[in-house]
Image 1 (tube, rainbow, N blue to C red):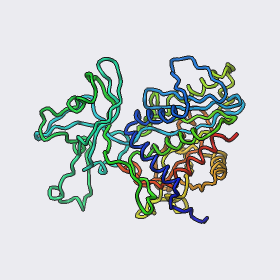
Image 2: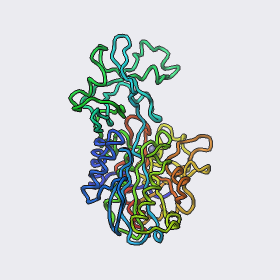
Image 3: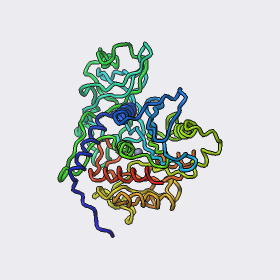
Image 4: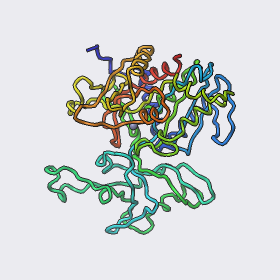
Length: 432
Ligand SMILES: [Zn+2]
C-alpha cells in the first residue's frame, strides 16, 4: 500500500476549509446554495443568462443559468467548437436530506403548537432530535414575488422522549415513526403559533406558498487535531458544489467547453424538471452549441461522444468503529484524497476509460486518489452520474470526497481533501 498522505492541513487547506464552512452556512436550502454559487460566479465576471432569452456566445465567454431556483449550470465556452472538442462537465447536487414543511402545517397536540413535516430523502432521523432548529427555503408572496427566507433564532425543536418513559430503549433500540415522533415543537401554547406568525416581519406580504425545510442552527466549524476536520451539515453534497464552482473560477479557457451543473432533487431520485434525470443539462449543452452559431444536428451527439462527465458526490469514508462495513481493499480514509466509485451493476457509471481519465487528472494535479466499491452483501446509494449517463450518453466517472456521518444532521470530512478535489476537477475542466 502506498504511503498515506499527511492529514495535517496547510494554511491554504484551513483557508479553504473556512471558506467551505461559510459557503455551507450561506446555503441552508438548495435555493440558497444556488444563490450563493451565483454570487460567487458573478463576482468573478460570470454573466447570468435567462432560459427565456436567445443566447449568443463567443469562445471564452463565461456565464450561468438557473432553473427553478434550485439548479444551476455554469459554463465557460471553449476555444474550439464543442462538436470538435466536447464538453468537460462536473455534476453535483444542491439538496440534502431533511424535513419539508407541509402545506397545512399547523397542528396542536397535548396543548402544544407544532408544525408538521414530511421526510425529504434519507436523513438519519435520530440525529435531528434535541437540536436547535429553524426553517429555510423560499416563499411565494401574494403579490407574485418569490423570496428566500432563513428564519433567525431557533424556533423549532424535536425533543427526545426521556429514558424514564422509554425503559426498553437499550434492548430494542430507538424506533421513530416519522409521522408520529418527528413533529417539531414550536410553542407550549397552540394559539398564535403558526407558520404565518413565524414569517411575520420576515417578509412584507401575505405568504401563499412555500418550499421550506428544517435546518440546524449550529454554525459549521473546523475541529479535531490541528483543526483537520470540517464539521458541518449538508456536506453531501455542498462539498462537491463548492469544489466544482471553485475549480471553474480558477481555470482559464481550454479547447473544450467547461460546464459545472448542480441539480436539485438528487436525494429523492432526481426525477423532476430541474433534477439530474430531467432535461436541464441536455438543454444547456444543446444551447451552448447553438449559441456558438452551430446549427448542425450532428453536433450534439458528436460533442457528447467527445465529452467526459465527472459526477461528484460524497463517498463513504471507512468508520473506525465499523471498519467491516467496507470491503477490506476499498476503505477510503479521510484525508486520503478523492474517491473513485465503481459498481458492477451500474449504481455508479464509472468504467475503465473514465476511471483512467480521473486517475490521470488526479496525477496531473499531484493529488492522491482512492477507490470505493460496495461489499458484495450490501448496497449503498447511487447518485446523479448513472442518471446523466443514461439520459445523455456522456462518458461518466463517479467520484467524491470521503465523508463520515453521511446523511446525519452534521457530517465530517477532512480539510485537506477539499483542495485535492478542487485541483483534480480543475485539471479535468482544462484537459483536451
Ligand atoms: Zn449526495
